[in-house]
Structure formats: structure tokens, C-alpha cells
Length: 500
Image (tube, rainbow, N blue to C red; front, top):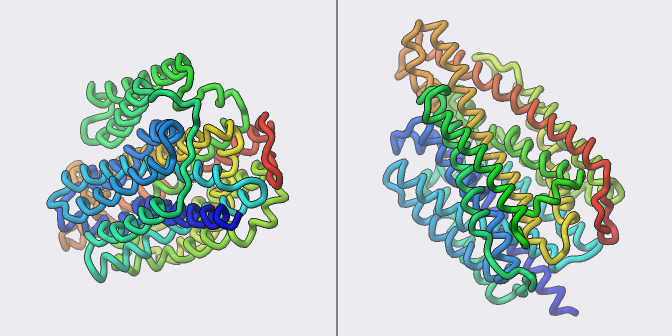
């Protein structure tokens, strides 16, 4: 019994450490983006791909990784993921141009998919009953802390050692996680999983890529162009094909029948919405703090601390209280708070101080801290325990798919709004500066005061627009959780947990 308890503790440590590293790599890069832009001479699309190449491959492969974990072993896939992710992190740090960095980030996403897909599955296998609730609360706090502290850690590393160290830091962390997996972790699998879902992988991955590509290139290529229309329509058609393929599989990597359960549909919509509406905003808030307000990478990271503290502390402080509440109430309340937070941040002006964001950052931290553990607990509850790899994969696919689509869509809105503002202040040629202003803020002015003033107005106009869109997106997720999760999942929850 003592040996089993020790294995459980080490498994939780390894899962939390790698989850922290994976999610940190989404947000740690945000503060480093202006430095990367300067050193590698990247435009807005190149910078967006630094975030999206990682999030996109994660979202595209995580369902397949979950199915492979169920078939070949969660511990085995975890170790493969650690090796790929750590090696790719080294390549990211050595990148010589923006294309090389984007490719290395995509490889990071491959390893990250294996790690994310096994995270909840490993916890679900090792923990039962009330202990599972505590383990998930700690894992949820880890998610929140990683997402929120990324800007601070990124600022410290970028200011002291340079942007490349936001990637090099993953190497020793990966080595530790691999040691834990080799020495302390138990293997688990689903004996009924017999083959991989290749057609599902191809249709899902291609659909996500085409949709994100269309959103990223829409402003530059024209939204009515054949390239963009073809990408968006093709992506939608492939999503339909993916559903058809999955319904034909005996053991699909995504069981589409789950979406017939209102509770599962509600948590999936909420997960996507918080990724697209809140987490996708971090790159643009970071550019605002550094390239409009003029803070250093470390200074920008420090300004995110109010959010960091609450995101980390709330799951730990409320876990006993939360055990007596339904997941529906916790998730809907957390999402509603995040929506309110984004509304509080809206209304920025070129002369605003960073404290205009403060109330919103605090409220967002509380909301994310409530929502993260509820999302994780609900994701495990709606499937057969043997298929927790699939449940983990679905949950994280929706979260990361939301981030990838959100970064692309919000970036397109910000650039379009900036172009409109620049055209009204500088004339028709002002539109030509829109991408540079969206990526570099006031630095796009090249020291020219009149253009700097127009650039500040344009960026803030775009940021206000995406804050409002983010607010509406998260609010939709809150409504979906409140309405759809009212109907409990048909499976019995472990003792100490309630379906809502």
C-alpha cells in the first residue's frame, strides 16, 4: 500500500511538472515575442505562428495521442512525449530565423500532445474517490499557475539571459520528468484498444490547419480571395468528414455519441471558449504592455502577477468548499467572472496606465481558478474509466484548439481594426502600417512622433475590440455550462464528486 501511495505521489508530481512546462510554453513565449520579433525580424503572421504552430499541433494530435496512450500504455507515451518535447525545446532555442522557430514549435507540439493526452489519464488511473478530487485540484492549480506565471518567468529569462532561454529552460525539467517516469510511474492501458484511427487523425489535423491558416492570412490575402475562402470552407468540410469517419469507427479516438450528452457538450463548449476568449488574448496584452506602454519583458511579466496569484491560489483555497458544489455551478461562475474581467479591461485609451487592467486581471484570476479544476473533473466523469486517455485528449483538444483559433481570429480583428484607425488618421497609406503596428506597437513608427501617436490609437482600438470579442466568447461558454450541464452525465461519479 505504501509503495502504491508513493507511486501515486510521484505520478502526480511528474504530471504536474510536465503540465506546468507545457502550458508555460504557451504563455512564457508571449512576453518574449517583441524580443523575438526584433532579433528574427518577424511580422505579425510569423509571431502568431510562434504561438499557433505549438497550439495547433497540440490540438490536432492530442486526440490521436489519447487513443495511442489507451492502446500502447500511458506511461510509454508519456516518456515519448517528454523526449520529443525536450529535444524540440532545444531546437527552438537554437533557431536562426522565424521559420526555423515556427517549425521547431510545431515539433514541440507533437511531444506536447503526447504529454497532455496522458496527464488526466494518469491521474484518473492512480486516484479514486475524494483523493481524485484533491489531485485534480492540484493539477488545476498547476494549469492556472503555468498560464498566468508564464509572462513573469518569460520576462525574467528574456531580460537576464535572452529570449532563447525561454526554451532552453525546458531541458532540465524534461530530464527530471523522464527520470520519474522511468523509476516511479506505473503503466496502464485499455486492453480493448486495438488499432489507431488514421483517417480520424488526418481529417481532424487538416481541418484545424486550414481553419487557422485562413484566419491568419485573411487580412493579407483578402477575405474573399480563393485561397482564404478555400481554406475556411475546406476546413469546415473536413470537420464534417471527421465526424462521419468517427461515427464509422468501432473504437473512435473521439466518441461522437458523447456530444449527445448535454453535460459533456457543455463542458466542451466552455473549454473551447475560455481558450479562445481568454488565453488567446495573452500575446496581445503582452505587446500592449511592452510596445505601447513601454515596459521591459520583466516589467510586463510583473504586471500579470495579480492574475497569477489568484489563478494559483483559488483552486487550493476552495477545493474543500468546491467538493460540495456541482461542477455546473463552479464552471459557469468561473466563466462568468472571466467574462466580467474582460469587460472591466475594455475601454483602454492611448493614455491609460497599466492599472486600467488591474481590476480585470484580479477578477480573471479568480474566475480561471474556479473554472480549471471544474473542467478537468467534468472531463473525466463522462467516459468509461478505461478510456480516460480519450477523455483527457478531448478536453485538451478543445482547450488548445480554442487557443489556436482564438489567437488567429483575434489577431485578424486587431489588425483590421488597426488598419481602419490608421486610414482615418494617416490617410489611405496608413493601412500599410497595420500589420507592423499590430505586431510591434509604437515601434512601427520608427521614432516619428505623429505616426507613433496614430499607432498608439490604432493598437488600443484593436485591443479594445478583441477584449470585447473575448468577453462575448467566454460569456457564451458560461451560458453553455449553466444550461447544458444541468443534465447530469449518465455515468456514476466517484464518491466525493457530483455531476451537477
